[in-house]
Image (tube, rainbow, N blue to C red; front, side):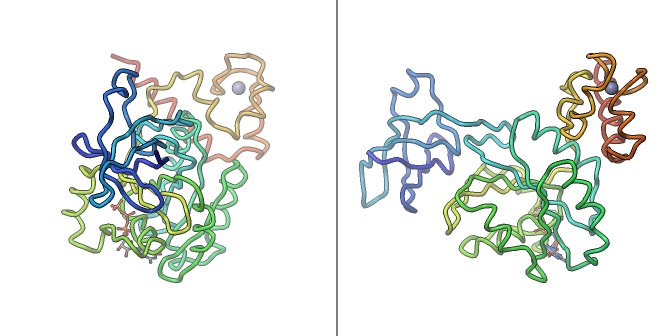
Amino acid sequence: MSKGKLIKGIAGFYYVEVNKEVYECKGRGILRKKKLTPLVGDYVEITVTDEDNKKGMIDDIFPRKTELIRPTVANVDQVIVVFSVTQPDPHLSLLDHFLILAETQNIDVVICLNKLDLVQREDVAELVGIYEKVGYPVILTSQNDSIGLEQLEKVLRGKTTVFAGPSGVGKSTLLNRILPHVTLQTGELSSKIARGKHTTRHVELISLETEGWVVDTPGFSSLNIDFLKEEELADYFIDFEPFAKDCRFLSCVHLNEPICGVKTALKAGQLVQSRYNSYLQMIGEIKKNRRY
Ligand SMILES: Nc1nc2c(ncn2[C@@H]2O[C@H](COP(=O)(O)OP(=O)(O)OP(=O)(O)O)[C@@H](O)[C@H]2O)c(=O)[nH]1
Ligand SMILES: [Zn+2]
């Protein structure tokens, strides 16, 4: 028996990578009896039934560390959320929505700001400062000027990483650059049509030469956080947390309550206005969702 990583599942077949070789596998009946469904990202035990044709059977699934819902991938170590510094301009509210979703799934995030070749470093210093202060690592990259690529590779090494971000920020271009052995569709090829296909694609882990896997995901233009409750939203703003303990009421939602640690910190410049604006916007979305 060998231990492998499930990298793709299509129509009842599971593709399992063992020492850089990929085996087409079926799941044994025992899995169904145990109510286990193999997921992309799973570490599995397989028996090779046909070495020449690379076929095998999945005997067991190792316990999952994490289970991401969208995309459905097990054992994800981190998400790299890519935004471009311009073209398109970074949409901070969208980035904050993404960060909140990642926090609800308890997953580590690295922010990658791409297309650095189009601006001066000074122009992005404020943006970088905002998110580093909040507590997220920020990497600056450019595929055109080969900036930050080694740093990015270092972050990916040995991990299972989901790449996410809005359309057109350069995710596929970056991945093609650090994965020279695969070719992903980028916006340059008949963009709109390619993009349509993008969304129906199967989730697939791409193996890195330096150990580790990445998952490319279709670009998003909006994200729903309105399944959250108003009173729990602030818990996912990791920068609010140290100040929320100074609120008079335990149930404070940091809007109009008297003696609110979050609003005091905001006035004192200890919290960033754009983050609080995103918070207000999300509260609005949650309230709207409740009205039926
Ligand atoms: N100036 C500059 N342009 C870039 C860079 N990286 C990518 N681009 C361009 O940005 C456009 C979009 O790149 P893609 O890689 O297709 O973007 P994507 O994020 O994968 O987009 P979706 O597939 O729609 O999610 C293309 O025209 C790229 O040539 C960069 O570092 N600098
Ligand atoms: Zn408060």
